[in-house]
Image 1 (cartoon, rainbow, N blue to C red):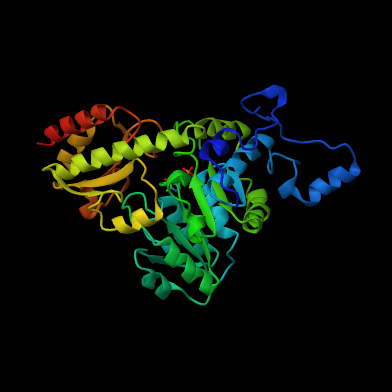
Image 2: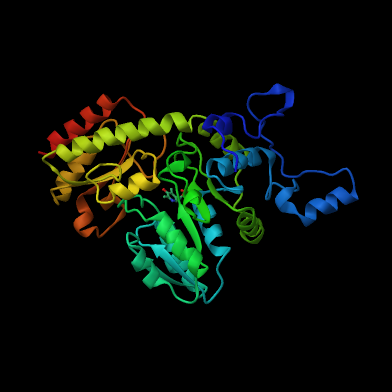
Length: 384
Ligand SMILES: *Cc1c(COP(=O)(O)O)cnc(C)c1O
């Protein structure tokens, strides 16, 4: 595939012939597309993947974004969905039927996990969880009926990596499809298809949108695989992105290559500071030289994003609450990938957190680093 500059993709690709010389594409707020005659109408109906027919299929605003996302991920084709979860579950189910088996990394996104363990189980699909850091463990989990190895590298609370080259060559040997959630690294820092992975999924609600104002998802891969997902799942489940949502993601993605290095830099600085803090037991950020999987991180990623976690030494929930509540600039919220810094304690979402009661996830936003480090220092003092 011809190499393109990132800004060529983000700012130009698919936008050469916009009406009236517009610099930004119009929002095609239309549900249907009409035809000159019987034959054109019939052709579109017989190959909806490649035609405009109905917006629960293709839409021109959406397609511009898809062309960019495919190019960013070095893929032949991409399809945008109404959410990251919709893209994930559609990509998984397109390759499964009752009686099949899927291998999944244990610490994957919570709704992916719910889908695999509860939803798929209702339709007779078996699963095996793996830690993912050892390819032999993944090989041992494979069964004759295994159809998919589902990866998320790194996972987004525990930051565990899988070796993409090793896993993809194992999968190819055994005729198993590989799917990876690449939301954390973004295509700016990791291109799984270059390591032989078949399909890449993203929540576009995070860095691709980048402003915490839109929900969306994407899958990128070979023309054949994405067409299958489109025809078997997307059209049937109606997990459609709204043209306006696609337009917001297009607007957000224009600055992706500028935002990611700032998130990276802020996360490096904050994680290094936290490592030095007396109150902190451990810091989980794959781009720290001290990280257990640093060599692997360097091998398959060009950088890191703003999301990492750390564990406080204390297990006292009241002190942990005091720390969390005294932050002024880190907002207490789910999700991540916007301009703003966030904090999300593990114990908020897990009623029985066990030893992870003091595990806290940080999203380093685009603020000046001093604003963030002073805020954390102040909260550390509150912790006592
Ligand atoms: C948020 C997220 C998802 C789900 O995406 P939505 O757009 O919220 O549906 C999937 N994977 C990861 C890693 C995420 O962070």
